[in-house]
Image (cartoon, rainbow, N blue to C red; front, top):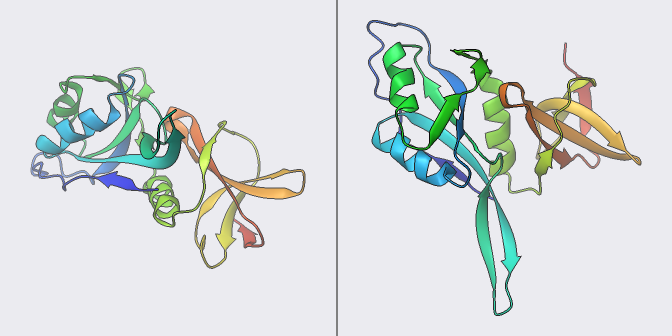
Length: 183
């Protein structure tokens, strides 16, 4: 599993001194990688989490990368109208995810958790979005520090990490990792 990351943001924070925040961008189906490259060319910091799967055809097998959250990518913006317009004017971008015309910021911790999970090269998959359940922090070697919702299914413990604005989640098996409640 790999992560596709792009160059850092070079937008000027002089007029709008806000701290850069992460936002979800809804894009045309199967255009996630192309839009990520276009945003990189515009010097917009963005992140497209991808997973790798082996696909089988009649004559061969091949490892293929797919977006973890189809039709979405993430951008880090400084809050200025110019930075939003730079993203919205990118061909293939449908909208910024939010309430009405106001984009909703994604907590940095949620983006960091997805990056951490994908960097560990462990099997994970998209999971139905959950609003209820106890929020936990994992204490264990490979997943140490991950936060999410604990789900138990037939005595098989799983951690679900949710990206609230796009109502998408991913799940990973915890095994024997220790967990503690998040306060």
